[in-house]
Length: 322
Image (tube, rainbow, N blue to C red; front, side, top):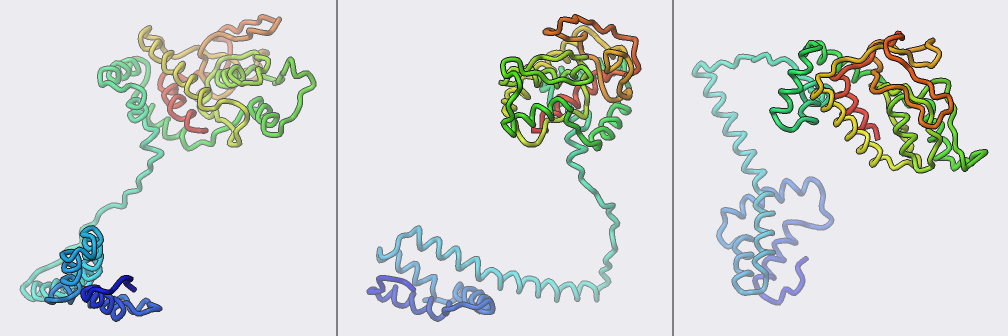
């Protein structure tokens, strides 16, 4: 109902609204409303004329009048579209009478796998190397050691495998999320049967609780992940800093024409390792706080390290597991 209907134009408009949109409205009333709006567009002195007069007389703002006109016009357009469909149906019958033939066109179903596109070799390369010259330099370097097509196929296989949270990260996250105390808070220590991998070592070193830095064999694992429940770590800063370091070292590998690393074991005893496509050696054995001072030499183990193309996967995939 329209308030302030002292003017004759507003009284007429109010009468039209009450008649066209009865209360309470029902779903079937909408079809009748569409028909009336369609008819009003062609009728002189109808609702559109009333709205125009209300604006001219200064009893309704032009903005409100325009909004109402547009709304009513759109409601009436449903009838226009229905009439167009009926006309098309009639003309289609005539077309068939004159020999028109409809032939089916077979279009193969296309399933868009955004994960496959996002982690393709080319898309990850574009994510890291913004300029075309950098990309071409990287492609040329990779071609010295690998087959481009084989790399792309491996990436699609790896991306479908589940990610894992390593044991020491799970333990730290447990202490964080449960606010569990330590026996000796001044020397927080996490023990593990194997040296920490590159990413676990970085995570522990960046953690605000200042955990004791464990030995590390400095391997990168493509299936490495952070836990879903956040702990007390500054996750965004850790991810950004580590990704920056990885990208910088990748560029150093390209500049120095450094190829795949040698093989070596996961454990210090040389007993266990991971399959060839699971890890890569980045640097030497790291143990900054241990009194053992042990160094691991490359080339004596079973685990084949990942090379440059796997770095791409780690840089672009692992950082999204936040």
